[in-house]
Amino acid sequence: MTTEMTSLIMENQNLIYSVANQFGKQELVEDLFQVGCLGIISAYKNYDPSYQVKFSTYAYPYIVGEMRRLIRENKGIKVSRELLKLQLKI
Image (cartoon, rainbow, N blue to C red; front, side, top):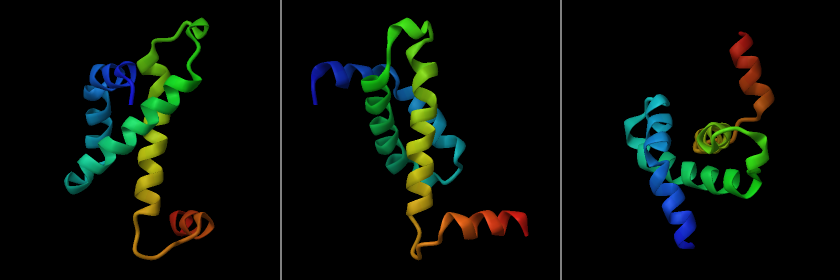
């Protein structure tokens, strides 16, 4: 990892931890932080300063998306999205 990426993660670590804490599962916070870092890196690769948006605002959906993916895939049994949506409707 380059020093630029490291400094980017260090600058935004409070954002990543605050999003991780919103998911409420304390035992997963460090894992969520790690995938949040992956979200920051993905956001950095796609960010264009001409969007006239702060980087943290742009990166937020990437961070949340990676964390949701971890939670969705971190189950003992694979359950399709269709069944999860059906469960919510019921």
